[in-house]
Length: 295
Ligand SMILES: [Zn+2]
Image (cartoon, rainbow, N blue to C red):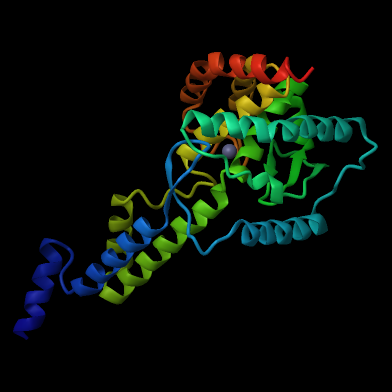
């Protein structure tokens, strides 16, 4: 009886009575080990990222291909003879052609060598008939633009900015980064359950560690995709300045319902536009360096 009373009092006070703390300590140890042994420098951004070493680019490519095959069953692909489908393919081809040079230039800025993961990609770019304001690039290079994006992009320059952004997510292996974070989070949930925490306590702990952001991509990954995407567009002779009105239109378009990629991740489109504005001199430099020499 006494024991029980003590327990209940603990719950009333701290709210964490009766928890097997050693389970949590073990998890913390594992998490720290996992974190440090899978932390790598990304040559293209100069930032430290978490990528599980057991997830190879080939694994990711296989997942991308699987997702693409499933998608083709449900989505309506616009025939390649369609002028819009052709335009999307042409824009992609120009961007893709500049990936090696832009990667080398970005890596050199951070004193590193570019990984050139694009060499393993089998590019395939399609237009999908859908109201959605969306586009994506899967690991391995399967890429899609939804027709709903066309009226928001309005021109090839803006479309190139969006597609450059999507290509960058794949090149920077943001999918693998998310999988690695999820793996940690799942381990954490398991440890939480094993330690005797209830659902509410677990959520409270997870929130402290910034988990629970049910986001397609983290904010930082969005910023990285914006930056390299802009450089790719500029290097491929598109006008990077179009990025500003594009994201303004995107903000308006997503006012009501939130499309998967472009609004839910960015509660504050003003910050994104400020970041892009700050990147404009660099983008113009890339345009000068890689667009004109190529002509
Ligand atoms: Zn994104």
